[in-house]
Structure formats: structure tokens, C-alpha cells
Length: 302
View (cartoon, helix red, strand yellow):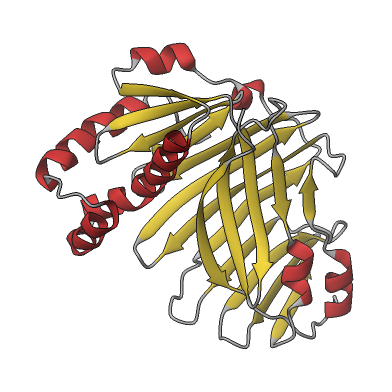
């Protein structure tokens, strides 16, 4: 068995900064906010919904859920029409490839979600992980909220209403952060938004941050039978082989960027160069509409 392989889609966004506050001090927030490290932290459960809106254009929704001791799910959708792009549950994963209107299914796989600092930036990674040499599946959720807030030092406001702390700050680069905290628990925000100087709308927003709450079992059930009957074209890859790894990396990239190109003509030339292909975009658009409808009958945003 090969060493653990991880493929991921990543996006880099600028970190912002926060300074003195009124009512709640920056020192309290900086010392109070804690990073998320699962499975090291002994949460009964954890989860969030994340939306990403980048000017490529790229619009996705990511849902992550965890229940101790080892149930994970990762769900990525195209925010424009709610079509599933990448789904993982019960150690089974699928990736949709719009250029072939097909679904690649991989098992067994683990879950990885990271948001970690890199210089003045933060990098978000969504990933499938493959078994290691001992056939062990690894799962990990790392969100470095502590570093995010420690880097803050400018132009902030804070207010408290009905037990909720509303917080905002502007970075040296002009990016803006907005966060909401439960006044009883400032170690983790309930909501978090990042806005760039060039865009008045959030490029990244975390919603429904929660822990130690009940999560329905449906989140961790992979609907294999329903998927098989939906009519979508499905290819199954068993783990192993450098070719498989390369194929999955390409499929993840295609899934994210190609659907943007289907809707945005100006991106098509770039996609063609990226994947060394010259597709019939009119045909692909028609096939994508059919495949997306089939997949949406199986996977919905909850």
C-alpha cells in the first residue's frame, strides 16, 4: 500500500487585522479565541458551513460535520445552482467532472479540511486522504482561528446585543473581518466573514460554527444505492497508483473551474490551456445540465 496521498483544492486569501475594541477588548478576543484541531480536541461533535465567492468567478459552498469518535463528512457544492461537486461520507467520496459529465467514485477515503496561515495569507485546503502503509485512514480538521485573530491590530468596532458580540476590523491591506460571538463563548465565533478591499461582498464566510450539538445520522450515510439509480455516469477508482492520484487532482480542479467556464465564456480559453483540451462547450453545457440535475436528486444542501 502506498504512503498516504492527499489531493486538495486550495485557495489563498489575504489575512486581515484587528485592533482596539470597545466593551470587549482586543486582548480578550486574542487570548480567548482558540484554534480547532480535530480529532485532538475532544468535541462530541463539530461543524460549519462555509461559502466562498472569488472573482475568478468561483462560488462554492462547503459543509463539514464531525461526530466523535470518528464520523466525518465533507460536502462541496457549486453555489450558483447547488450542484454537488465533491461529496465524502462513510469513507466514500465522489468528484464530479463537468467536462465529461461523469462522476468519479473513490473508496476508502478520509477527510481533510485545513485553514492555516502562510505568511500574511491564509490557505484553505479541502481534501480526500488515502490509506497509509498500514491501511489506516486519517481524518483531520485544522482551523487556525488563534493565528487569524493574533495577526489583528487595526480599526475595530465591537458591540454586544442580546448576548451576541458583533466584531469588525480592517487589515493593513484593506481587507475587512466581521465576526459574531456568543458573549459566553468567545473562544470560537458563530460567524466569520472576510471581505477584500476590491469587493464589498464577503469572499469567504463561515456560518453555523457549532460544537457538542446533535447532528442527524443522515450526514454520515453515503447514498450508494440512490446514486447508482440516478442515471449519472459513474467511474469507480480503487485507491492506489500514481495515475489514480493524478487523475483525482485533475478532476477536483476540473470540477471547480470548469463549471465556472461553462457559465463564463471569458474563462474557457484558460481552462482549455490548463487541461490541454478543446471541448465542445455547447455540448458540455447541455450534458452538464443533465448530470447536475441527476446528482442534485441524490445530494442536496442541508
